[in-house]
Image (cartoon, rainbow, N blue to C red; front, side):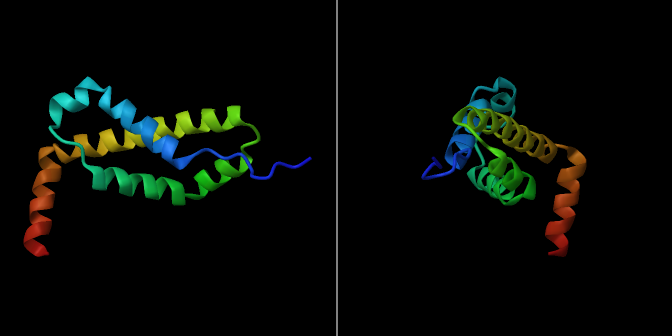
Amino acid sequence: MALAQPIQPMRAVIRCKAKQLLIADPELWETFSCFDEALFQELAATLFRAESYQELAGSCRSRQDAVAIESRLALGLAAAYKRIKQQQRDPLVQKLNQLLDVVG
């Protein structure tokens, strides 16, 4: 008997787990005073549009698979956010951003 709805990882759960990981990261909060919600949402949207996400979601066969995928993707989303926030503090990146502001 087929399931009425296919089992898939839940996007809201992935976002929530990623935020929990970020909140629990003392290094991140020692360096940055606020959470960049726009950046986080853009990263999440990009993740969910990616072909690799679609393949993972489509390969999910059980709730256990979905939970594992949610955790794995949450780790990746949190790591991407943290990496970008750290790169924003790099003096070279700041200088390039200033140049872009002048040109734009």
